[in-house]
Amino acid sequence: MIFAYNKEQVGDVLMVILEDTKAIKREVERKGKVARVYALEDGRTLAWNIFEASSLLEIKGNGQVFLSEADIEILNAELAKEGFAEKFEASQGPVFVVGEITEMVAHPDSDHLNICQVAIGQDKKVQIVAGAPNAALGLKTIVALPGAMMPSGSLIFPGKLRGQDSYGMMCSPRELALPNAPQKRGIIELDETAVVGEAFDPAKHWKA
Image 1: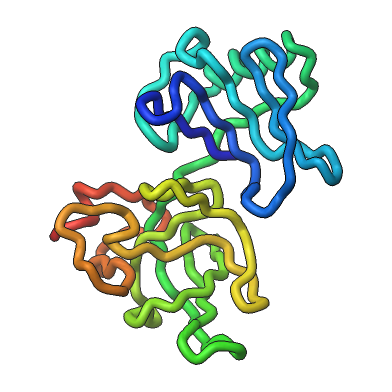
Image 2: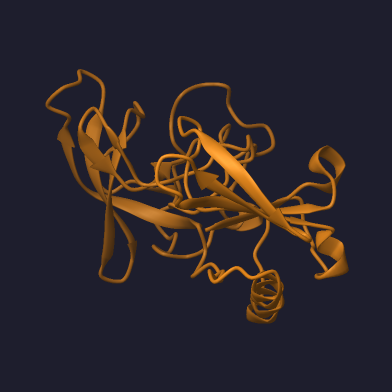
């Protein structure tokens, strides 16, 4: 569940995105300040738009925003008031974290992709299919987990790449819009002292 807000570009609308909707035919049902975006095929909810969002919440930030439990309660009360039974949930933990490649094998159906097992916390690993030329065993980098919105506006969801499950993305400096990012392929290479699972902090983890 991704919460996004961009008053300059979109207006005073809080967008709540549940899944990638690019290839899905959809319709909108609106009641009051709440609009539910749903799939025509089966009626499942794909996203929500909360209009006049600043009348309900004090939203700080531009792009992806992270709401408090109190904010979520206010939004859920608004959904219930308009007759919607579904509820929002707060994001669990950071979506950009330090990860370490612990296993890597060549993708069986590609000459440049690798299937990586990436540690993202204590006893937590995810599989990520990556084509970064500098990916290597033991490399620590920044991982965008499902539920992340990139600076470009693209969204990270679980998916498959050439038939292999991929649960996130290892990021390049350019993809994270970091200052003086090299304009070439390759994921961020962090110092060995970086702590796996730690939330990404540009001031701490990036030195141009």
